[in-house]
Image 1: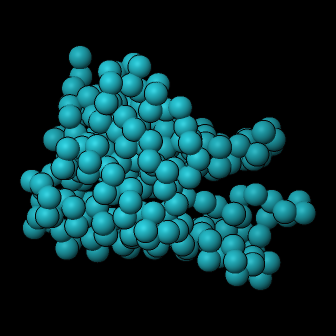
Image 2: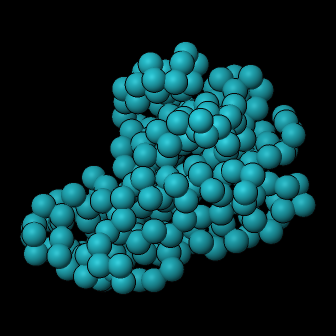
Length: 236
């Protein structure tokens, strides 16, 4: 049995679906204990506890646009982990441009300021705040062992938000390297998740998305979860 993540305590935001769910499942199969965080409740913790034993997982509701909600998440995760957090996986995200309105994807002059603010608050500010409070706990409460490259048309908020995450990752990685806290981000391209399911339901759109990738097909959430396993394991 592969137990490379045995007893590591991992917070996974956006755990109810897509990349977050796949990563939670994969981490639990390798012995990790999972804090599933999301706006929407999920049966995933029950599934993990039934499969891998009691206390494998718990669900903590979290709105990453709310600083107090994130503080609550970290505090309760520390309790669940008996005083420690080892891994933070920031998967919570939105892409309002993927939900076509009036049959047309958005360009910058068509995107509402409210939608821009929502994406930046979730994708960038939410990631920053999760890192802020998790890093504080990693530095103070335990032995430190933690853990958008191209543009796409009609995504005037999503593309900048993901480029910001790359910059934030590079900066945090430098600041916390001396504390032996590893900080990385995954840039997988299009992946078969609910975020783009309405595109994939159209065969022509699905073919175009697949053709845009050198491999000729989209990745799966499990592919991303496997990459996360490597980054969160001793091998990295």
